[in-house]
Length: 211
Length: 381
Image 1 (cartoon, helix red, strand yellow):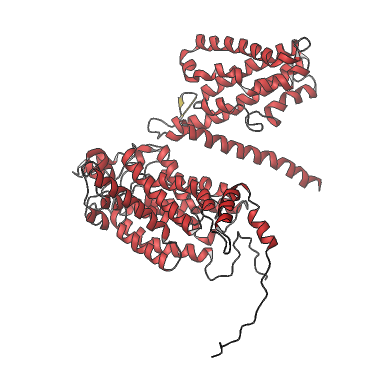
Image 2 (cartoon, rainbow over the protein chains, first blue to last red):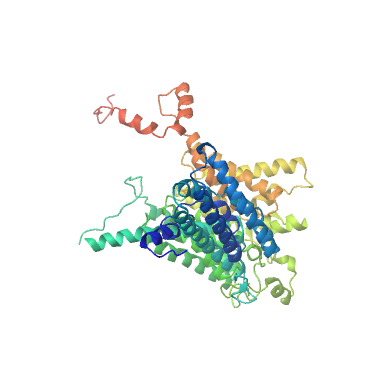
């Protein structure tokens, strides 16, 4: 799968990564975003698990779009998504039990993640498999980036480590609040602030250049 | 050179009492308290006050500089936040954590809401709540006051390297051959060890080796100055202290062996400081006189309840933050009835006003201005 053969495909991919980023722009899927981003490794695994489910289920939904009855489409999507979530669930359990326990119920809860259902309904059900999967991959990468942005900040301040590697030596004073739920809200708020500032700056700059 | 145009928040009333004047006088009234605090704890307390206030001022400067909020730097409000925040932190609190508290106080507690006059919660308490949740050990580490050599030597936890765990103050006390229990606040001693301090000792804070804040008596005096100059409403502190005393007294009368006497409740911890300086923050307390009583009573009640029935020894901070959150609601339900309106209107208005914010403006649009009548200069005999 080549994503960059035409500019349009690349655009489709970048749509989810940047302009429609599920965490920073659409503010979707807040449950896992706030709950599992205590450490960078948790964040990236959650992001990759969601990415896998997103791409596979959007591909399948798109393949089946011609003969899915309109009345039961949501049920069909949920069954498809649940199939892939079960696969991811078992895979993570097999790879690392510690990670599985850290992520807890949030792996199974990918089933009801609104990003996935949203993509299936809004994009995959109306497009051919290839564009649908590219769009889904962009969304998944955007979600992973969002989770990682939160996880990195929370792990550095909350534990003094990054991907489990100690950054400050033994005497680091952990900020307990950063691994608690309020820390998640504060960091998410700070990123949203920063992101909207960036997003607002660009049109202003372009306007200033045009004048 | 033309005068700079200032954009300020309402009310645009011509008065000798500007925001600057009020804030400046609050700072003046805080200075004796800070001086007493430095006298109690020495250079560590001084460094803490300077660093926390400095962090608040720099953060305020940054946010005012971005032009996204009302207010100017010389209105002293950030100084008040800084001084109050420093007074609520332990004297040996690491300076870098103090700076974090100051930055969070202004950025999260004030700037994000739009600056002075727009904040929902007391900024100083937002900063303190943040560091309380982030560094629970450091914020519970107190050292006794009036230690010998306090003006020559820092408490070792003060100059901790940023982001690093501060030195253990308990070991330092032991080296000075002082009991480790001396480093606990009177409230913590009561809560965890059942030791009750005398109310007169607490009132002056002058007896040595007690881990207490500035003298409640001094704070009350400074508060009385502010109230007499009408820079602060006397109703709120009175309601807070009255309701705390009443709740504590009721419980004490119910079971004197289990609950401490109401004087201990009043003069220990930060209740007096909170009642006089933090609950009375103009932006975060109700403006209606009736509302002030309700708001103050809520703080007093919550403080005593948190102190008695929660895992924390002190509850003033959370009590005030909760009451701040309730204050817009209190304000709405205690709106005074306009003159000439009956009981029925009052009931109707109470039911509709919170749902219909346009109520007042329509009233004002239809209002008829009374005709001017010229009164004779002297009444005829």
